[in-house]
Length: 310
Image (cartoon, rainbow, N blue to C red):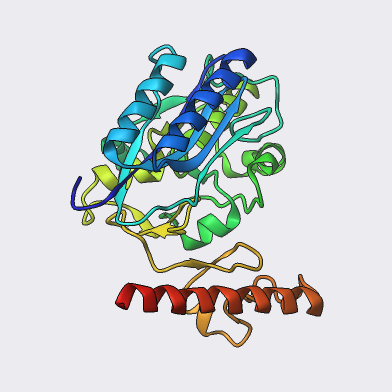
């Protein structure tokens, strides 16, 4: 297992998922969790499946076989990574209206989306002067790392993307009929849904990076890749570097924002209590509560270290 204890699999698939099958699959996965060291976050909706799972290789195989069965052998858009430690505390399964929330019910990514571009062809496309490149992720993800010369819509969440497209996209297009629109995200799901939206709005020449940044970094040698910085991921690792190893960022446990090593040196930063992002967001009572929590965490770490040494 590449000298790592845990296999991490990110996946998604757009398809028509019936409610009775959603509940059935959820119950089967929870039974697997009860008997095995399976963790992760999975989101089920009538439009498909999205999420990340973490376990030993044999357990991952069982889960993937089960998911493949329930998706009628559809492409799960799998991205694989490895870690020495668990990257989730436990398995969470959420049933929502959408597997990635955009709030535009009239689009159907499983039937109408843009053109997939594989990692090997992505550099050529985004270097083309007739191409605009759009990062469909949230502003804090973009701040950690992105592709050279890409447009940052500066959204707080993906549901803001449709309004950004309505208000700003045309200002970036020299010619609506001929300009290439290339979009990307972490694993491919948001940019795929974004292409479906733009096609619905009548845009042409729409492309999205298959497998997202994670697949690109896995496929393209470091000396050739055009991604700059680190890639934010929604688990304990926070961000991955160019080698898809845990990067230099950690999470502010007060507000949940990623903070760099440099951010942790700022005068506003107090571990587990506040960072420069949330300095004005919380009351003194909140900070007192955060401080007590951090004290308990630090005490547990010391006790566990003593047990390990003994």
